[in-house]
Each structure stands twice: as structure tokens, then as C-alpha cells.
Length: 222
Figure: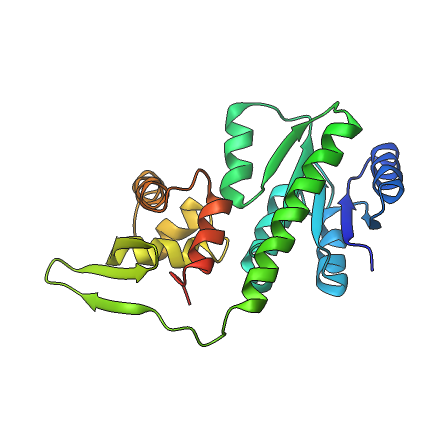
């Protein structure tokens, strides 16, 4: 069966043109005109990838993706933002919420097609590796030292996460923002960002989406 893509955009022209292009490329497509409808379709159809606008009625793209990421089964679902919001701050917010790629409007359909193809190939590869891996594979050599450092050994890499870094990572994989993580751990968003930066450095990942994938692949979270 063709891979299923959800296209969410309140602009009918964009919604239809993107959907038509993806269908011609061989994908199945479902469409939503706002974030609330998109969220319902994600839960009902479980698409393989989401292409969504940010500025939408009822539920904007940011809140839509945040709610999607809150569900464990959708933590690795690839997300592409299509938007006219092109500032650095806007892009950072999108990546913090869990989008994989950010494509400013207007855009070339061929570029979107390449993004979709690459994200789906990577996603399918990860899922295949998970299916081949024993579900009960244990963590090796777990121990808590006197410096309150959790040592997680995973061949061929070793990671040394402090208790606080582990707490931040656990909440991050649930799709929480810096502010939400800070509220739960009684930390400032700036302090949370420092922990996230440390986690990115220790896992050699470049953004939060990669960090979540890495954490799940290496059993750094439950």
C-alpha cells in the first residue's frame, strides 16, 4: 500500500496543489483545513508523514504538532512545516516543538517532494530496525555513581547523563516545550535549554527530533 501523508492547510489552493503533487508522486493523501481536523485525522488514520501550515484556525500548526508529539506512538512521525513565517525565532520554535523540516512559502514542489522522500526513507528505515530488534533487549551496565551520574552503555557508544539531564530527556521525548519542562522540573527555560544543548552534544545529534530518535533507538528513555 502507498505511504499515507496528511496535508493540513487552511488555504484551499495550497492544500489541493500539494495533495495533487504528492498523489502523482505515488503517495496516498488525506487533507485537513485546520489543526483540529488534522489532529483527528492523525489519530484515526495514523499517517506516515505530516505536511502542515502554521497559521490555521481552531488549532494552529505549532499547537497541532505539540499535541501530536505528546503521544508516544507519534514521537517519531516526520513533520514538515509549510509557512510564511520565516524568522529565525519562528523556525527555532518549530524545531523545538518537533518538526523535522521547515519550508517557507512560496516553495518549489520538487523541493517539497525531495524532503518528503528523504524523511519517509529515513522513517521507514528506523521502523524496520525496530521491528528486527528484540523487544526485551536490556540496557547493559547501568549504574549510578557517587556523582549522581547515570551511566548508560550501548554498543558502540557510551553516554553519561546526569539525573537532571535524564529528567529533561524523558519530558522532551513526550513533546514538551522548554517552558513546560521547566514548569515540571522547577527550572527556567534558559536552564532547560542548557540541558538540551548538553544532551545534543553528548548524543552527537543536531536537533530535538534527532535527539528523540537517538534516545529511543539507544533505549535512553522508557
